[in-house]
Image: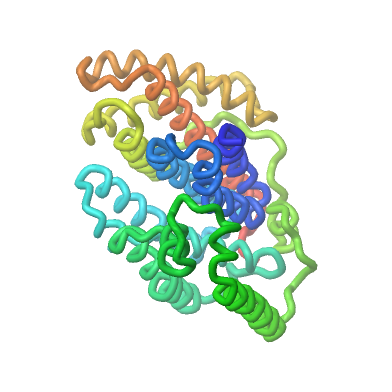
Length: 369
């Protein structure tokens, strides 16, 4: 069961680019229940898993951000989401290096719920027609009323919801089963159930006040794009190298995520300069390799084929680059190294594929509707 949860947390986020709203909800659900699974199946390994849990959170949010390049209009909604994402990413990187929990409160993860809100709206309507003021007000509301209390609870008060409910609400030891906890105070259990029902009824009533959507519910990003009048996404992509700001952003994104994972995973902590230079070199050489493939007419129809080819290429590039630029003492264990290269490759492939889709749509017709 534990292995199944880990595999699910690695694979489920990959559906976010094509099915954004169901994908992000599924990823968030797995993030919420995996601790309970570990408590029941492997409590002794829970402390070790909590380290990887933080890494898996960044993993699925990185895929969510990459999907905005493919699925969002290049307008205020996208640029605000990009700013929220990098703001959080910098905060997590600083936390991993300074271990100051207040940084996670200052750099609250507003991006996650902002992404959920935009994708929830996009199921039936076009949120990219909303004004900058409306989008900013929504982000501020998420930050103030949802994320600040949540980040304070988790990272400043350091209270776990499961522990709080068992100890403070149901008055049972932490190792008690939930059946024991719920039956220990049946009045509290009934009150919580009534609260859930009342909340569902309020949400249903509020939903009825929302203006009708512009189209029938569409869960597929391609169907949503068609409803908004966007050109269809190409079936095959070219391994074209994008330089300029696109290259700079890719280096920043991959470097920050690699630094965060390097601080979480086993092995020596990766240096900021070494990581930035090594990542930049790998991405640069990888981009030239993609350009070389493109000039020979190579196209990618399969995401996994591209991931495999680029993974092999990036592993070789990383080995050579690491030997040239990094001291031996800074080399991570082979398992960590291969995982980081795999993560780096996944980010590069997603970033390049989705940038290609965005460019094709921009070339073949107006993106905004």
